[in-house]
Image 1 (cartoon, protein in one colour):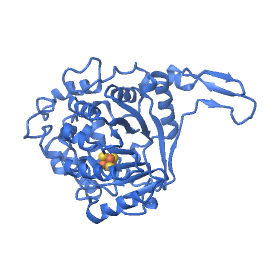
Image 2 (tube, helix red, strand yellow; image 1 turned 45 degrees about the vertical axis):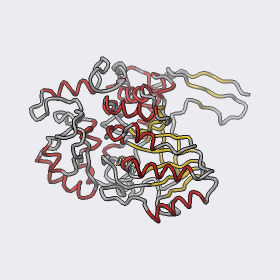
Image 3 (spheres, rainbow, N blue to C red; image 1 turned 180 degrees about the horizontal axis):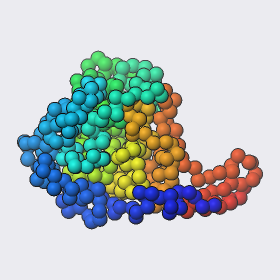
Image 4 (spheres, rainbow, N blue to C red; image 1 turned 60 degrees about the vertical axis):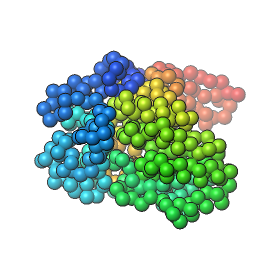
Length: 414
Ligand code: SF4
């Protein structure tokens, strides 16, 4: 049996050899026609583009500069050449419904001359977001159904989410919590924070707490240290996990001191890094990841499989290798959730399985994420394949196992 996924005629745009892995973006990055290098060449010739793509290290100035303000309006995006004025009416309608923010680090990565730029697609509003499909849900993964107290989602016995803030430095156009996040989104403070911690303390089965939001790393170092200290005081909590996009989109925020503040004394500490495209691994982002790893956090990844961003095997391969090269173990590749106005990002589960199957054939085991689906409505996560084993439904008959070339092999019964 030959898998359809390995027939060369089926490969389409993925037929080219896998891209050389982007060890790290920015100057001095390794060879090959990486998306980042291709973008740089294109952008250099664009008249509206600043003369360099390098992320500056000065503390003031315009797009791409550390310390510059995020772009939070359609007017700001137009002023930076990231949105054509002709699109502004539709995009103002989008911005009136879903928050907009783009950090200087991400704005600097966008090639305005490329209408299919994968970074722009993640952060710059699109008129397609105005179309809400019947199957799309305001709360696609059903957080509300499992929230016993404000700020806590307790879906599984041994772990709980602690939603510390509803704001983010960027607003992803595919966000599964897009109806809940935005500027001014309430932070969990005072009595509400105390009540959430009291709930965690009162449930000894909770072994792991996952800090999420919004993006918890938008909080100050002082506040982060306070959260870590409070978690450390609860004996049955053994693992603290932070979910964040900040090291990639606002890497200057993750100083060595900030990385240390995230450590809850006496607990195992994990940081789940959200990135979706290898171009996000700028030199600054790689340095932020190194500071986190050097501070003693175990780094794991999460990415969303997104049409027009990373839904091809070469991009996924480069992304997973970039994670591993930066000491981030690929963890979850999420099938996109049924968030409102995100249909243009979604592909079918069959398409997703085909891509993941080809990763299995091409890449080191270290680079393999679990392809995961959040069951709509709140029933939790389920790995969605692809399957390499068949025939197990007949007891005593053995099974067929498929190798990386799609060839089936009989495996004897026990
Ligand atoms: S960083 Fe996370 S929570 Fe914030 S907009 Fe992006 S996906 Fe949503």
